[in-house]
Length: 450
Image (cartoon, rainbow, N blue to C red; front, side, top):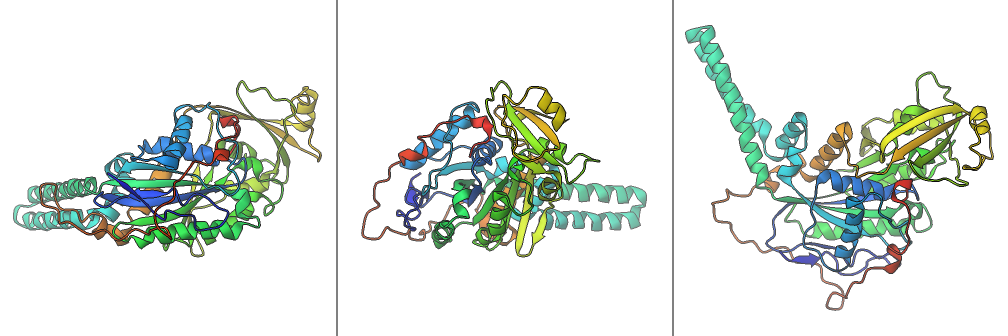
């Protein structure tokens, strides 16, 4: 299938990324298109989250060309090899994106039973269909119970259960006809978002959403993902880059009517250790983080206050904050993570100062955090939280009838004229090249880069 430009031009002076964006062309059925803007401060782990998301989705890329193909191949190098060198930071003025797809049925299969029931209920009318079948069976059971006593009631219950099972199977079949969900992950440099160019980044994403919605023949959703790295939370509740970005989160989430956002906390072993029961909440903790086998020479020791980490990470709850619906994703970016706390005086005497820079301010404890690089993906509760959140974006209740209105496979499909694409001003789409500076810098993937 062919792909067509979404805009074919850059909308915001000084920001590149929209001209190379494409979407499924006429005649290609997709269940939904989702744009996810991954936002985080320098070194907080945006690239790690993107790679974890791709592995978790087990997603495949559509038929891309040009800059999109180059970006996807670069990120797939990280997906396949966690220790591969990667770009250290997103260049100012460049917003790369990565396009992948997952079948709606594959998304369903990775969810728990409860998650599947929720998705089928929204997207395929499970509650309505199965409920009607179950209700009919219950009515039959009640009648049989009156006529035949307990045996009739049991038979009626069996009929009700069978009706519910049929409703479940029909809902799954309907979802399997919905097609693919196309997910576009945008790597947004958070340190620029709260700088003097903040309005430009908002205008960039606003132009993206507006252009996507100009084609209204398929469901579409936009949502930001904010990365929270506990190592960077510091000693002031409102003073970290993460805290500043969180204040701006509603402005980005409101670009979509659903106003949803995901906050991804990516060093949960650190949070567990820093927020251990019985610890003094006012203690200052220096964190010595390293990948196993990595040699540290003169490394800096970030310092956090236990209560700051607790409030941003441990005590943060899912739910509505004003007009914004927030979901939290808690996971470890590394594998085989361990965290050991030692009083500062003992740790300093153990001759660690040659490897780490002595903190300029007082410290109560040192937390040695070690991890292994590996081809990680979200697991357990984190996996269910991420996939369930994506399912809510792709299949909200309000688009159920449109998303799954496809006829049976053997029925003729009426041809539809797609909505016109936005053409670039002044004629043909200009050629797109991959910005060299995006991938020119190299660094260690596991060290918590972008």
